[in-house]
Amino acid sequence: MNDATATIYADHVRVLCRRSAEALRRAGRDHLVIASGVEKYQFLDDRPYPFQVNPHFKAWLPLNDHPHCWIVFTPGQTPRLVYFQPDDYWHLPPEAPSGFWTAEFDIRVIRTPDEARQHLPPAARSAIVGEADAALGDWQPDNPPALLSYLHFHRAYKTPYELQRMRAAQRRAVAGHRAAEAAFRDGASERDIHRAYLAATGHKDTDLPYGNIIALNEHGAVLHYQYQQAEAPADSRAFLIDAGASCDGYTADITRSYARDDATFQALIDGVERAQLGLVEQVRDGVDFGELHLDCHRRLAGVLRELGVVAMDEDAMVASGVSNVFFPHGLGHLIGLQVHDVAGFQADEDGGTIARPDGHPYLRLTRRLAPGMVVTIEPGLYFVDTLLAGLRAGPHGAAVDWTLVEHLRRFGGVRIEDDVVCTDGAPENLTRDAFAAG
Image (cartoon, rainbow, N blue to C red):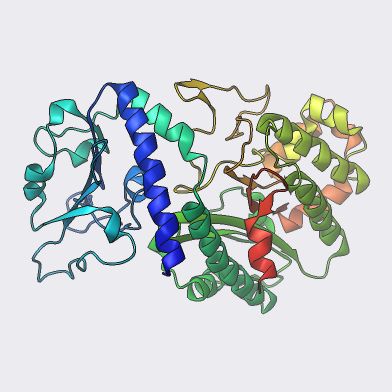
């Protein structure tokens, strides 16, 4: 890390301090105490599950693998880090705190989890954020709603430091996507494509922000396909990859679709990509994401009509729900410390909910866009047997070219996803910029 990173990180911590001070005022508390979390063990075993850090903790620090740590913030004071570094010969303990971030914290090193007590403020005046099992004596996480509502709402607006880390995550993910496409072109199995992705990103499975979707042929119609077959299919016709990467706790979430030697399916991919790029251009200050989702349906309905899949007007497809058969998920979501970042429906700093458009229960974001927000834009068209069966039996079944659908269902489906920053002007497409950089 260079001096510029240290500078924007210091600015990032100052932003968190301002937000936290206001959140404490709203909650009527004097101190913010954040637990990193504890290791969780498998039932009837001594093997831990992969540790998942509290997102509120990693908002402050690039530490993702550190259980039993605490952050303490009191307005007007330097933030405190209670850093667990056990004297352990069974496992390699964490290194001593070092790096660009240490200058921003009063660091207290502890050797046992219980030693944290002496470094924590009075529990009665503290807002304690974390999971219930992180409790330590009197310090029981209570997660005050007024405090969390304020912090969650503002977490949507990324600092320059956060955007820097997200750009780095994009570059790592793009390296994996390039390797995965090459493996598909070489006829590899889903499992071997996944292994190529991991090797190119430098990740292991537990480093990934979510389980990779590596789907060949009809598996591309399963929105969250969760398996990776070890054997390559005899005819590897299509490939859908939804795979991300992480950098210092910040995530990338990218999807691409590929065809092999089929002009009709390639035309479907091209149509979805045109729609996707048009939607990316609308990631602008003040845009209602719920309305953008409905525009996505109209655009995708246009692709279906142009290719002859459905002989209906675009607006009629959307109004009747026909477009939902082929595009059954939401346009996108907030992204940052979590893949599906918090407060996608939140009305304001105090909480509340902005409803999804009627008939669209799976949309994950309904807020108006504003500078600093990072969202995914991920339209798709799929051929899902159970949804197609309902369409065929319904009043609009006669408008569908079922011979063409039968051909296309062999390829599963198409999804194209970029991570996009809303700015004061034109959007910044983090994903396309990373692909363009080579």
